[in-house]
Length: 223
Image 1 (cartoon, one colour):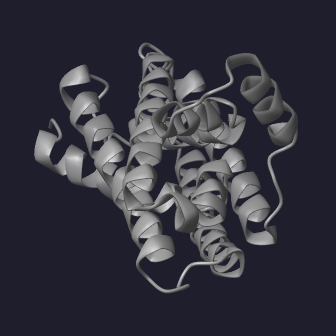
Image 2: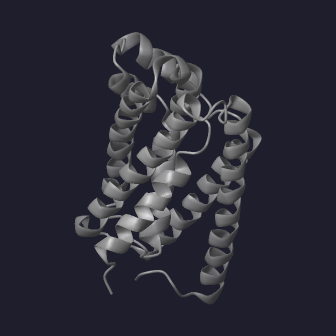
Image 3: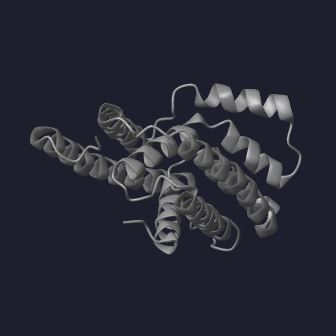
C-alpha cells in the first residue's frame, strides 16, 4: 500500500521542524546577529539554510534507492539507523557538537566567503556534517519501515515538507530574536536542543525495541 503524498509532506514538515531545533551554526548565527541585522536578514538566512538542507535530505534518500532488495541489507540498515539515532540523541542531549563540525564549518567559510544572508545560511549548513548524518538516519528509518515509499513520488513531497518545516523553525527563531524581546538566547536554544536529543532517544528506544522484536520473530524484513 503506497503512502499518500500529503501524508509524506506532513511527515516531512514535522521532521524538518523538529530536526532544526538542535543547536547548530544557523541557530547560533540567528541568535548572535539577528537582533542587529533584522527580520528580513533572518528570513534570507533561513531560506539559504533550508535550500542546502533539502539538498542533503534528497541526497540521503537517493543513497538508499536500491538498498532494500536484500533482507540482510534491510536488517543491517535498520540496526545502523538505530545506532546513529541513539548517538545523535546523546550528542544533542549533552549539547556537544558533532566531531569535526567546527573544523569543516571553518573550512567552508574560508573557502567560499559568503557575503549575503542567503549564502551564509547555505554554506553554514553545507559545512555541518551532522545535518547529512541526521537525514541519512531519518531516511533509513522511514524507508526501512515503509513509512515513506521508496519512490520519488513519495520522497519529493517529504523533502518539500522538510523544507517547509525547517523554514518554519528558522522563522520562529528569527522572529524571536528580532521581535520577541529577548525570548531566544543561547540558553534557550540549548534547552531546545536537549529536548530534541531526549526525543531522539525515545524514538531510538522504540526503533530498537521493534528491531529486537523483528529479529527475534524472524519476520518484518523483506526477502
